[in-house]
Every structure is written in C-alpha cells, then in structure tokens.
Image 1 (cartoon, rainbow, N blue to C red):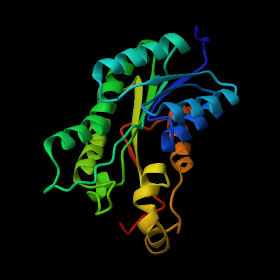
Image 2 (cartoon, rainbow, N blue to C red; image 1 turned 120 degrees about the horizontal axis):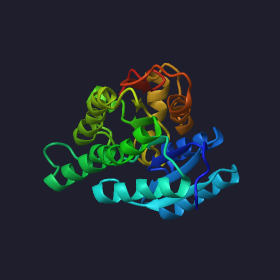
Image 3 (tube, rainbow, N blue to C red; image 1 turned 60 degrees about the vertical axis):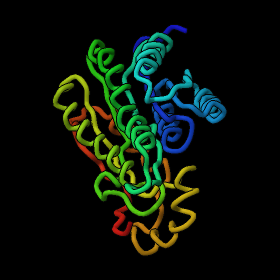
Length: 254
C-alpha cells in the first residue's frame, strides 16, 4: 500500500490497549495515519478497526520492542506502507513488582530491555527517516516513578523506576543531538486507570489515593495522557523539546 504525500503518520508502540490505544485513536482523530506495534494481537486488531472506522489508514506489527533488528524492520515497513513517518510514540512498557532482594538478573535485564532499550531501538530506527523528511516528533512515555523512585505498589518498584528515569536522560540528551530537526519530549503519567494498573494499584488503593493524595481527586484515564501526546506531536509552531511533563492531577501521596 503506497503512502499519500502530505498525510502525516504516527507509530505507537504498545498501541493495542491502555495509554497506547488512547494515543493512537487521538492521533487518528487529528488526521494522522497510524502504525501500531504490540504483542497483543487480538487487542491490536480491535484497535486497528477503531482507527479504520475514523477514516484513517492503519498497519499493525506484532513485535517485541526490545528486539533491535525487529524495530528497524517494523519502522521501515511502516514508512513503506504509509509513505512517511512523522511521529513516534514510545509507549510500550512492562511492570516489575520485584524488589532488590528478590529480583534476578534476567528479570532486571528484561525490565530495562522493554522500558528503556525499546525506546532506543525505535528512536534509532525512526530518526534517519524523520531527518530525511525534514523533521519529526518523538514522545516517550516515562512515569511519575522516575521522579519518586517508585512505591510499594507492584507496578513500580526500583527496576521499573530505574528504566523510566533512563527515558528522561535519553530525552534530554537526544533533544540536543537530534535538534533542530526532531523534537523529543517525555511524559510522566501518575496513577492512570489502565488494564495493568487496574489489576494492581487502583483496585487496592486507587480510591484512597484519589480522595487523600491527588489534588484533582480522581485517578487519571488514558485520554489524559493522549491529549498531551497529541499537542506535542502536532502543535505548530512548537518551541518545546527536551522536556519532561508530569501528568498526575498533582499526586502528592504515593
């Protein structure tokens, strides 16, 4: 399928559900064609149908973001199918509930590989295409835990927090290296109602935290993150790069 000149294209990792799905649908509503990357094939197929229902083109790739060679194959295939690549949303992530005294090397390595190396893999694959086109936008989803160091909740212990903090350093460094052609920013969500968090944190502590520890007195939803992604990905003019946006309703209890 050949691309249409001038139609912007976004690639969203972890795009099958949760924050990634919300980002993909919000960008599709903004007029972008979408490439989804995920391991969850049934959910990715459902999200693809929703994007098509909005009148946008979509391609979907089953891929593990930690696979460096596969990232380049996927990015090149997306460019070939949709004609270009303007936006990369690094959303794919993996929780890690084990603490320092119980985690093994393989679990630690896997957490870093998905949450941090996955961003490297897709940025390195996408950047040459964006530069050749004259520019692009990258938004990487980090976490409030990059600042807080994580909490005792199962989704956010030290390995996860370490990987998400690495995204912030990568964002600042690459904003200098890839500017002025590519704008790259990071978002740090707080407590967001997703399939993962819904089964771990929100079920146990969400109401308590919302009442007593979030200024806006509610848990976030994926669209809260997707709207900022849309702004960073599409706003013109944009004089924002290398930044880290905390989106947590001002969460002062963790």
